[in-house]
Every structure is written in structure tokens, then in C-alpha cells.
Amino acid sequence: MVASSNDIDGRLESVRAAAEEILGEGLAPGLAIALARGDHAPEALAFGADAGGRPLAPDTLFPVASITKLATALAVLRVVADGAVGLDDPLARHLPDAAAAADGVSIRSLLSHTAGLPPDVAPGSVPYAPGLDWPALARACLATALDHPPRTRVAYSNLGPGLLAVVVERLTGRDFPAALQYLVLGPLGAEGYLGAEPPRPPARVGGELGEHAGTDLEPYNCAFWRSLALPWGGLLTTAAGALALVRAFAGFPSGFLPPALLAEATRDQAEGLGGGFWEPLVWKSCAWGLGVELRGDKTPHFAPAEASPTSFGHAGASGCLAWADPSTGVAWAMLGPRTYESWWHRWPAIGAAVLAARV
Image (tube, rainbow, N blue to C red):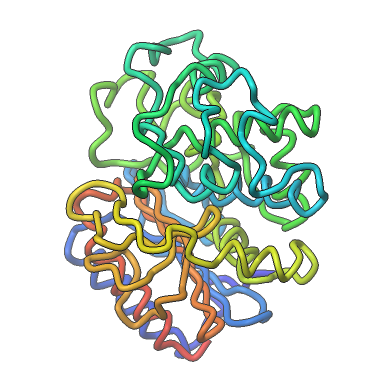
């Protein structure tokens, strides 16, 4: 049960004020926020409208881009917990046909972006055009070789989740969208859609949408993009759904994953390696867990300086963040209908307000 913005009193006034300040600056037309402390029921707020002018509600669906990687990692960790795969299994044991199945490439390295993969499949290997689907993208992932030796840096990549999704498919005998529903979304009670049209229109995203902006192939906003079922970025969910994904790494609900596996997932797997995303989000030491990014001492960052170095979560380029701080027991998700590049530097204000709130 999620309390809506209509039910929330002055306890969350700091959150409301931070959101309204960002909207007042014109950085995004709206925001949906969900937050929780410990095992308390989440609370949700919504402000403003999407990029098409539709008012946002606490249950508005958003394309959450790379927050999808949290869901994919959780699916992998669930099959690890069942004993079907080991974190240190070589990729070659499960995908011998993968070009990246070299010495040193393991399930662990794929989850922590330390496998040595390039950022994405080779340009032109699978043209972004009608007829493209997840099976074609999966084949392209299998055909993509390493870019550099494993365990030399943290190199953020969509290919790791892509290959892991194929591993899950082969282990479960289900296509990845069905496996994700069975392993993750259903057990968490999170509303989410991957590769399927949702029952109500999702929020429209504005901002930097690339060469296909304004066409029937526009990223985030078209049925074609949603049909691709991208295991690294195609999930549609609500603020409460994104919150449920990051809270699963914090142990909620109890029993979803074993405590020892959760401790390993939220431990720094990079162990001092540098790397990250792209400038200025590249760091001398880039702490990363098994599917979750760790706050560490990174500057600048999406999460606030007030968050613990052990806090963790994931950002999405469509304009969203899901984060959890085990030192306070607080977790939050903020989903905005504008791509990240022009306003990610203001996201820490929302996190700081959440941490200051009397949730």
C-alpha cells in the first residue's frame, strides 16, 4: 500500500519544497517521488506534468531507462540464490557461444561492469529500425567481443545486462520479459512492463532524444521502442515500482534474497578500480556492487553528499534515480519526464530533502 500525495502531511514538506524549487527553475516539467524508511509502507508524491502536458500522478508509469538494470540484476541474483548459477561462474559455462566469453569474464564481472565490454553493441550491427526486436539484440550481444581486458576498469555497459538476460533465459526456459515478471516484478508486487504495451499511457519524456526525436521511432515515447524489451533500459514502472527494486537490495521484502547474497551485492566489487559513465561522471575510484552503483566518495554524483558512502542505487538517462541508504534505512525513487543531461546536478537536492524528512 502506497500513501498518495493527498495523504501526506508536513512531514515531507522538505521534499515538496525541493521538488517545487526544481520545477520552478524550469529544469523539468514534473516529478513523481516515492520514499520509505525501513519496512514502513512507501509514500508517494507527484508534481507537475509530463513533457506532453499531462498531469503526473503517484501511479504514473515512466520509462525508467537504466533503472531497468536493477531489475535485471535482481533476476540474476534470484537464480544465483536458487543455485542455478554461481557468481564466479565463467560466462563460457553458460554462454559458450558469446564472443565475450574470454578468460576472466564471469557473472560477477558482468554485474559489476568490470568484464571489459564496450558500452553497447557495435553501431550498425543491429539497425534501429522497424523489424528490430529483443532476439536480434540478444544475438548482437552474443556477437560482441571485449573492448579491453577484464578487471582493468569499471566500464559502464549495456552489454553486461544483455548477456545476463540471455543467461536467465537459458536457465529458466522463459523469454526475458516473462522471466523478469516471474522472478522479480511479481514477487515484489511491482507494477512493471517490459516489451509490452502498458494498460495506460506512460509519461512522455522530453529533452535530448537523438536523431529520431519527433518520429515514430522516438526513444522512450513510442510503441516500437517499448517493444524492444531492452534488459538494460526498457522497463516501464511507477515511482513505487522503482523504489521496490532498490529496496530489494536493502532486504525488503524479507526473504526475497538471502542476507549473505544481499551483503555481497551491495559490497564494492570494483575494489579501487577507476571508471564510471562519461565526463564528469568518471572517478578515480568507482565503487560498484552487483547491479547497484555504490556512492563511495564520488564527486560529482547523482546522490547527495549527505548519503552514506555505503548507499547504493541506479540512475536512468530518461531522468530518474532510485537510491537507498542503509545507514538511515531510507530509500527513494524520483522519476522525471526530462532526460538527465540538463538537470542531473539537481537530483542530490531531492535526496538530501528525503534524508532530512521525518518519513
